[in-house]
Image 1 (cartoon, helix red, strand yellow):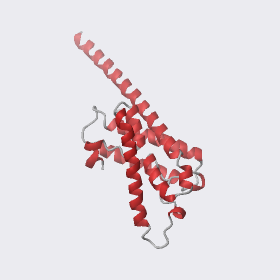
Image 2 (cartoon, helix red, strand yellow; image 1 turned 180 degrees about the horizontal axis):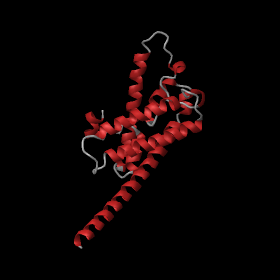
Image 3 (cartoon, rainbow, N blue to C red; image 1 turned 90 degrees about the vertical axis):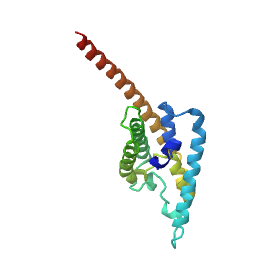
Image 4 (tube, helix red, strand yellow; image 1 turned 30 degrees about the vertical axis):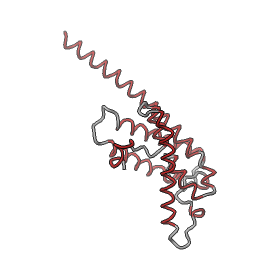
Length: 198
């Protein structure tokens, strides 16, 4: 999808990504609210399509099945606690934003950002599916929670708070790293120039 529509919209698909890009200085604040609204509407529409397909199977029950909702405690795939879920979602979303900001940096090789971002997101899913069923995207969590309807809505707050906090942390880390790298590159250039002048 990033290759398909990234050049049109930036390919965020995720309120946490929009927050991270805003904090990272890569996104105009006037576009933030419309993007988040569109992302949530898109996630609800996608969940509706999934529900329509899944409900075609005899005996399907979105509430009983969990409907791919994110959860902690008894609703975590492997029984991880609220604290474990919170930490995992914060850390993995921060990691995701560092990948996004790095891969889309003007200094990065061109054309590879969607591959790096996609592989990073795949790794994040492999790590966190057993913990929370992987969110790192509040819109995605909202869409399926609406159709699950019970405990997923009660636990949804975590899957808004943790990814947004993680996105802010990731953006701050990347800004610090980017600034530090620029300073180091300038210092190395200055040293090499001064040696060449001697």
